[in-house]
Length: 183
Length: 428
Image (tube, rainbow over all chains, first blue to last red; front, top):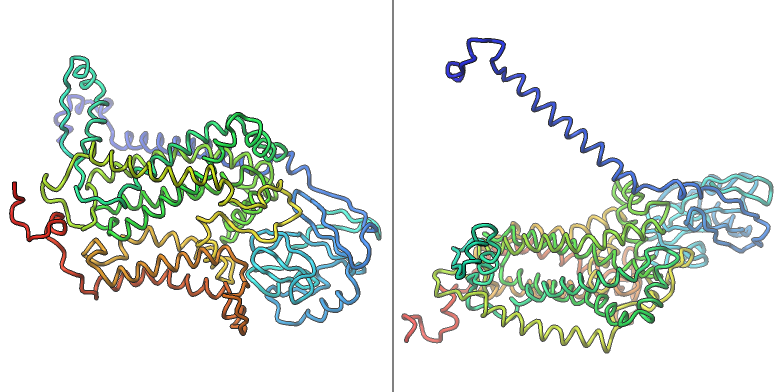
């Protein structure tokens, strides 16, 4: 019908091809959508850690500063890291619980470096909501989170409370017997 | 707006402007908006909330002129600069910080009013949903504002709340990193929170405009829940309700001033007077009072993800309320059973609020008791579990109660409850 009203209908070269018109609409909309995504990505990605933040990625620490049975807290990537010099009793308690009912099963040996069992290096951030657990509290003589009462044992494993996972172990390596590099 | 315009341009310049930009007509129609004549003082909180938003925006813009959004400078710019050095800075910050609490006092009464009188029911569901959106935006704005002074509670509150999002599977961690801009809460977090804290009040103002628009289309509900039947049932918003709202705002300002001038730190936490320290968690982290019930729900559940979902669900329930309440009767004046469950719900929410402020294993009334599953039965945790159970059950009760209860007789017009004698024609 429309064709009969169109004076150019008799001339195929001038006729409007509906498929060509649709193609232009779809192509224009697709280009606009692609452009919107391309513009959105930098606006989202700028929220990610900046290069100077990422640059603060490794830390060396001299372990001889921590006497037996003591603990220090370092700041690595603006996160607290616990460095604990464990007593033989703490190690025994942790190893004895290896096969107990653990919420996040992991052996103590897997959480320390072989030959350096006395050194427990942990991310000091409760796996529940990120508070800083304190040592010596709770019924497992490990860490107790003051915020929501999560209890960790002497291997930093979650034993009770709302936290779902064990305290994290950062990537670290022994540079010598008394020096570690975190990150 | 939705009622016929009654504006008549009187001067030549008004007629000239009216045919180009009818802004005077818009304002005049807003003021002549027909409003049910039986609104009580519970209906003044809309006006009070507009006042609160204006106060927060004005004081906030001023505070931003003196604030330094950096980890090194934020605390000092607030505690020394604004509180001690800037002329009247203590007053402006006192109004802004306490203003947030006042805003929530008013919004909670406004929400309770809406539930009691069934204001969320057809045809006002969109009005209600927009209100819920404003409430969520308010919580986000208040939370980010609380982070800005960069004290211990600011820092650790930010850490706990951003970690909440990390509980979501798959998307949780990347979103948390986007919020932090680092490996933890730090300078980049503070900067982006400041930017968003400045932005969101204007978003709230825009949603408030939609909220008022969605109010003016169906018109106000009223304490009887009975629809307006004729022009006799309404009065013009101005002067009748501008004066009533104005009087209520005056009373509200008295309470506001008591806090600002006599109890400026009563609603804050002493820990926030200590600069943020990422190596020391305060012994007892609690959010501001207006978020405590939700915090208690979060802590009541021993599983991280389920706790976060319950927290979100407790607010999500409000969004679903128009479809959960099956009763045809709007006002709880005529629903004695629903009214009882509603008041228990308010009480349960208050219990949750109290629980949220306590240690999870704190003893109730100092009573020593046996361990039930994980906590003593007479502990804050079990109290919050029982209260949270009721908090959620209330919405299920509303679903079934509407089908089973027998409401009291509903008056045929909003005049009937006011007039002592049965309505003949109002006598001259």
